[in-house]
Image (cartoon, rainbow, N blue to C red):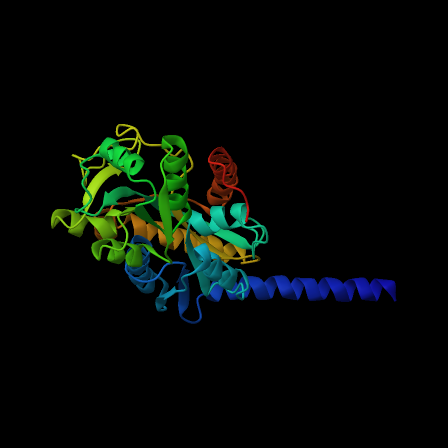
Length: 322
């Protein structure tokens, strides 16, 4: 009887394995969703839509972008973490929901390692410190002097872990008093700067370059180790005397936990092939986004390293879980 039970169990397990493999081989069988934590109009949204178009062709199924903004990306992250791990729902996440949410929330809705299956790194962001043109400053030194002489009068827009961390460090290290105005995404933040409701933010070239060229935004520094080819005249934050950032600013693709490895591997391969196409690279890199792919295993190792780096960055800035 015991032998029959063992054989029956082995048969069930074997059937389950073959069912999983068959499902992975037939994947995808319906439209795929790439979920974002940002509303339309920002850098991540632009990158996602270019990649979705390329993946639609290579995978033979529509790849759709779904925006679920709010709660520093926790809404989108929780949605994907709870999704069926059948390879039809993915999360194109920045470092904010994968680093800030688990490290700065006392009760995060998911674990960045256990709740997701790594698929591929997508790339790294370029951030520019921009100011409203009416602000009477021409560089970072003048900005800090103005902030010291006008405590509590400057408003800055923050919509991500990077923007929040950088302004927290500016306030702490330069000993200036500025007011945080929280936003759900980059697009709404830029809209309010253009409208005069806030004076400063860190944002990507996708949202800022057209307004910089039109004189509607004033660039003060770029958050990069070296100057950007898109804005060669703008100093780096280090050159400008502002705090730098060693923890990375990036985006990567994840599936829910227990996504079959065959699907994760194929999606990674298709995504990296799309990013290698010259037409895709040209459209994305003109936005100021530095494409950089990986295997699922490489992204998994990268995540562990980044969690350590971000934990130190938040600790050094005095930012604690709330």
